[in-house]
Length: 420
Image 1 (cartoon, rainbow, N blue to C red):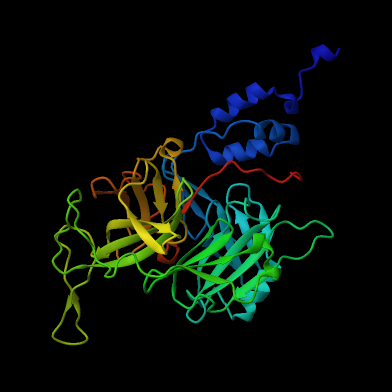
Image 2: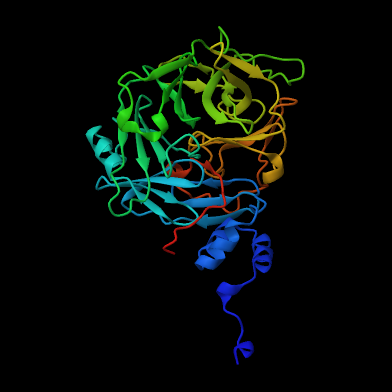
C-alpha cells in the first residue's frame, strides 16, 4: 500500500532539487524554494551557489531592477518609514516613531535595532527632515570572519561626521541586547566613505584622502579603548589631485578642467582595500548679473556632471600611502554612492577590468531613471553609456525624483530562518 502512494515533496531527491535550482533564473525564486521546508533548505545548503548574473539596482521606493533581464520587482516599504540601502541585499528602514531595522530584500527577514534607534534619537536624527542631521550612509558588515560568532555590525553615518556602530542580530530568549558605539567626530574630518574590512571600520576623508581605522575588537564594542583611531594613510594619493592623461587612455578635451565628484572604498576579490576617484568636468558659469547665471552646455551631448573617468588606488599600510593601480586583475567593480563591491566577472557575466557605476544626477531628465550610469574600462579609459539595458522599460519614468537614487544590490544565496 505504501508503494502506491507518491512520495511527499520534502522527500525530493537532492539531485533533482539541484536540477530545479539550476533552472530557476531568479534569486527570489531560489530563496522561496529554500523556504518551503527544512529538508529542502538542508539539501540546498550543500549545493554549490547558483550562477549569478549582474547585480540588481534598488531605488528608495522599494523598486528592485534586475538589470540582466530588465525586470522590476517591488519590496514593500511601510508608509511610515524612510528607506536607505545598507549594502549587499539589505535595506535600512527608519520609522517615523523612532524605530529602525534591517530588511533583507529577498527573504523579507526583518532585524529590529532598538538600541541603535535610541542613539539616533539622541542625535536628533529625523529622516523626514534631513536638513539638520541627515543620515548620509548606512553600511552592514558582510563577513564575520574577524568577529565573534553570530556577530554582525551596522554603521550609520550622520552628517558625514558622526558614526554610530551597532551589533545586530535576531536575539533569542535570554540573549543580551545589542551593543552600540557612538563616534562623535572621532575621525576628525568630513567622511567620503566608510567600509568594514578585516575586523576594522575604515573612514576616508574628503579633504585630503586620509584614511583612518578603528579596530572593532571582534565586535565587542563595549570593551573598546577610549582612544582607538588609527591613521593608516597620512597623505593623499598625490600631492595635487588632478586628472592625468596617460598614453593608453583617451584624453577628455574639456578645456576648463576636471574635479573629483566622489570617492568610494571597495574591497577587492584578492583582499585589498581600494579607493576610487570619480571625475567629472568642471562647471563653467558666466553671467553679467548675479541672478542670471548661465551654465555652458556640454558639446558632446552629456551634462557636465556626467562621470568622465575613474582612478583606482590600493591601500599600502606599510608605507602609509595609496598606490595607483592600472588594472583590476580581471575583476569587475560595481560602484554607487550607497554601496560598492567587487565581483569576479565569471560569476556575474560582467566585463573584466571594468567599473560599473550608477549615480543619480538630478531631476533635469525625468525620462532617464538611471541617471549617470555606464561602464568604465580600465584598459583603454573608455566609457560605455547605457550599457545595462537599451531602454529602462522596467522602471517607470514617472518615479518621483527623490526616489531616483539607485544603489547596487548584490544577490547572495542566503539562508532563511529555521522558523520558516
